[in-house]
Length: 100
Image (tube, rainbow, N blue to C red; front, side):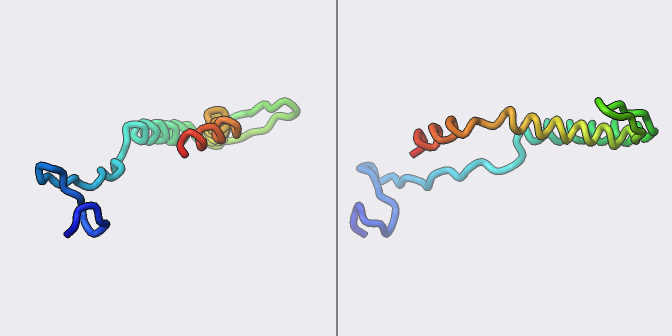
């Protein structure tokens, strides 16, 4: 095999072969573990508080189960956090330019 062709890995002067690049790390990250624990705590809290309560909105009052109130509040918090934590369109364009 000739050196520099695309048929195999190149060898340096010592004869050592350069290994393939390391694949991206697979598995569960600490962030995913924390998110899972928080989700479990949220679900456990909601299930433990299954009673009906009075919910006051700005224009009206209604009765709902605590589980519904907690799930809706959690979903709204997730959506707000997603949009607040997401980079702006301009910043994403700049980041793409840097990557290229």
